[in-house]
Length: 115
Length: 116
Image (cartoon, rainbow over all chains, first blue to last red):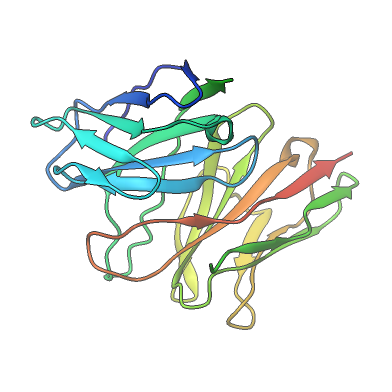
């Protein structure tokens, strides 16, 4: 699985958009970009994933550059409860063929939402 | 919303004792995982399990670790003889089957193991 690079920490004002960058310059064509977050030692929580198109769900938006070498997770209106470590992970998606395809977590970005 | 549940939430044990951590994955999921996180460090993969056998395991998952799905609902992690360095938060996760556009892992809240 391709390696990712994220800034170690970021701050964001409450109510503003939080934009979390991730570099994955060695990503290959069949690898997806996944984002998870971990709120203070709780279990990691899935946020969103994408292959090459931008994606949006109720939690966040994922913008992937055309060359797929980087992406940005956007939390449109950050709240204090969004303070967490955010992990960008690149890997081949799971399939029904029996491959368990585990995730490899890096150090992530500690996002602190300030009041 | 379905969730992965783990017990106990916290266990304190003496070095050399056996520990079993239990997990109830989401009911229709087919893939199961154990991860651990030593305080202040990264979340580390231990083992994945599919079709009643280990699919992948990391270097951490040595002979003192074992996993089992004894009754079709529980998924357990056993540490045979605990060491001080086994103190960590242990997370269970599960994933459903699906095509190539899936892969979301659902994690439990963790079991904190303290070895004295």
